Length: 194
Image (cartoon, rainbow, N blue to C red; front, top):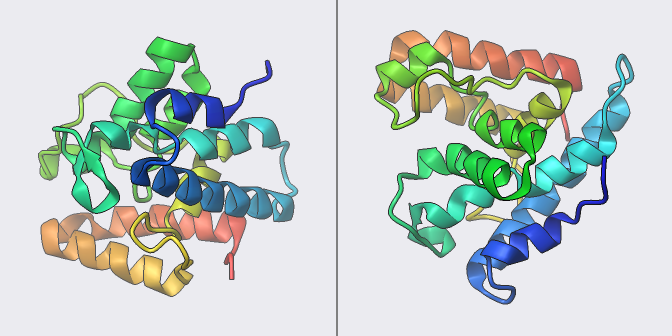
């Protein structure tokens, strides 16, 4: 892999010193640290640590396009599209296909096609929004433990699971099982970060 500086890519879209830049960088650093720590404990396969770090730093780059004023993002797109939008940006501007897939597949425990349709999510059909590679799963899982609105706090696994279950119970109870099963599979694979 060529030398790639995620901070330079972030600064290309987010003006350093702004609240959005600070939030994105701090959140991404937390996710990257946790993903790398979890990778250290997972010894059954080769993990591309450079890709893991870079992708963790860039996984939320698409938030700039979303209407998420609580994190100083004043775009027009629904927040759920930030992974897809970030993926498009990384493909178009940087040719980073592998990193782009991490962007697309990191939301929640991933989003199945059935979930996309049932919730009428404004995401294009014909793409996978489920993490497949170890690096995708590590970023997806690590991201669950950090919020962009409470940067100084890591959630417990119990909090993550409870919040995810409540999200699906409120919106589409029949889909709780799939989302929780994916989260639990990652928990079994990578362990409790506590």
